[in-house]
Amino acid sequence: MNHAEVPGLRVGTSSWSAESWVGPFYPPGTRPADFLPVYAGHFPTVEVDSTYYRVPSAAMVKNWYARTPAGFVFAAKFPQSITHEKVLEGCEEETKEFLGVMDLLGEKLGPLLLQFPYFNREAFARPEDFTARLTRFLDALPAGRSYAVEVRNRHWLNEPLLRLLRERGVALALADQAWMPRIGEVAEKFDVLTATFTYIRLIGDRQGIEKKTKTWDKLVVDRAPETQTWVRYVRRFLQRGAVVYLYVNNHWAGFAPGSIALFWDVWAHTPSAGA
Image (cartoon, rainbow, N blue to C red):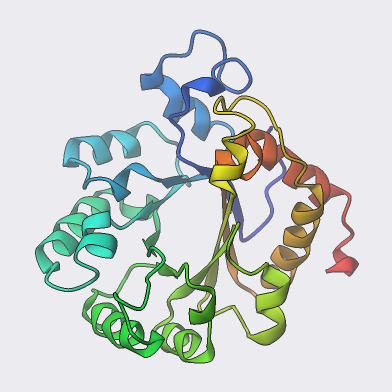
């Protein structure tokens, strides 16, 4: 599953800890403690999902750094205590702790993702109410890091949100998941490139795929058409000079490493002129 380096493009999975990958991806007998260095021998980046549940210890983050090669990049989610529980208010200490620990990755630290849930009108009566709160939070973040924002309300993908992100150099996370509009629909309405990089998450339909399988060791959904679309857009972003981070979840098609293999196969058969 190795691939030729494409300048500006980093493709990886959302987490490296799936034990069902032993055999189809990790060599038989690979211990969980050795997953990360084996993973990093195949892919140049990973999205850390575990930081969503808790701030990792300093020792853990230092271990991530030590067990990956030079040039490897970690993206990571802000903890849910910030994005879901306190929803950006009164979370200064949690934010400071999270950023401080992640800084131990040094040059291997990539984008940090603020992934928000779907908010109903009881949470925010208007999209503008969320945007105002997000503005205050982003303006308080320290500079020198890359940030991305993912919203899960399709009607919140609007020009005021994009302008807010663009003015601060924050990326709009482009999430391909069941209830959000497809990239073509969004990109026809707006310029979705709001920073010097873009952050793509191929998530899929979790409930739908779990009716087919809960063992993440093979592809069970044909994602070739969607992959062709994403390859075209990734080429466009690269042509505009953006760095592209693309992460694939097991729920996208059943087996994230297999989805990446498909991505590179489609990439190889999609002429640049077709971007």
